[in-house]
Length: 69
Image (tube, rainbow, N blue to C red):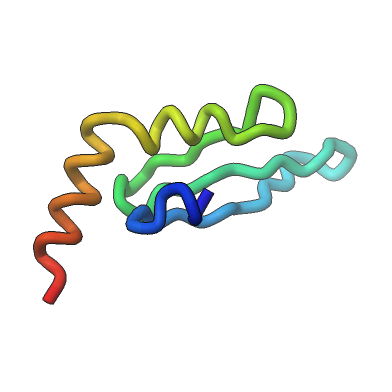
């Protein structure tokens, strides 16, 4: 994903819900504070890719890039 969206900042976070449940990966958008996205459907990142193409997200990324020295 980082190759497709080189200007976007995000990180993968492993969520451990309960002792006997399977851990889940979530994506955290560093350009949009407070946003966590579940992987899916299945083991894909389609939910997060929708966010990366979102107009508000693109505006935040572009604003950060134009403010960079």
